[in-house]
Image 1 (cartoon, rainbow, N blue to C red):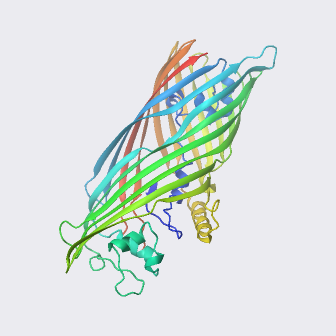
Image 2 (cartoon, helix red, strand yellow):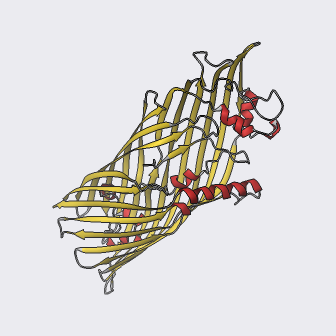
Image 3 (cartoon, helix red, strand yellow):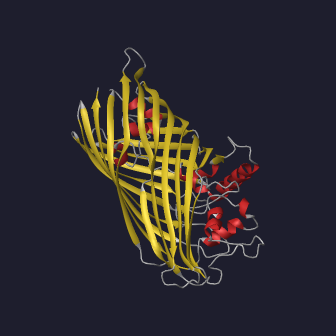
Length: 490
């Protein structure tokens, strides 16, 4: 089965800026692990036919009709992330990250009009977390091939003054690539030692979040039909720090001693989307929900820079050179896919419920806009290239969320799962995220706790290169999150 995530680093377009806007980034900002309240998370975020929980407002806005009283809630959480990495059969390395975050906070104002067919109407304002990006991992070991092959490829048939300032330019300035024959075909110290393995290492740290502000309005008509709409305003923050080095401690490569290439990227942005939904109560036990989500129109800004150091030894002795790129900045747009959500729930009186959501999303319909603030033909060409890659690589997926709650008077026990289909066209595999929780519900306040487990494997590629050995890193990750929601009815 093809891996869900292939983290690809260091890709440069013809304009010279680092292309964080690669096809995978469209998935980063549209492939969700919804984390709202602890109750919603505990039942696998399968809230589309239930309502009465703030998580539902990011899934089916008609859930606002399930509120009979106003309330305010907040959900702090603790996340533990552990990643084990291995470079091409070398011994694995393990790194861990612990962090606190805030998956949810909100307030709901509910009113029950007198002598009206509308049994309740409500307005809600708050935030749900759609995804989070904290991770740290390291790989080290011996393999053949060098990142200088990439730098030489980027420089091919370009004069030194035409080289990009983030990769090929610094490589030329430090001596990692050179052109002794002056034919614009650049050489490296590894050309005569292509089958010789040597040491490589990289530390990768990422952090950030995708939070969605929820502005919701809706109501309950004759306790039969719940209707609602949500305006979602996402706020995105993503940071990555990647420290890569190659080292010839065993003196296997003539001339070469040490290379260091560091990359730093921050992405910030916001956008807007819309959601509409209905919930129909067949009777007191059975209900169905249907919701549609518009694309999210995002405006994102990348800020990035790189550092490079290259050490070598020649007839003149040991030499060491460093180069620092300029600070790069690029603003662009991204349109994420439409979504459709169908839901069903069966309520066992006061004993609990079972619930399920089925969501369809076409990841291949995401589109970048690199020419929003640019008339550079190279940006237009690259935009077309990346969007074509998205269209050819990703396709429609079905995500399933299921959950259940058992009520024992005021005490609740819950469990659930999310089954997320791979966004790749040629992969029908499902990625499972499991959760469980408990809670106490009172007339004036409630307290819920949940624990979510997210495990999986992914392929990491430290740099892209053609006609040369490619480095492949296998990552296995575990992410456990403990959440606590405290709410008060007002």
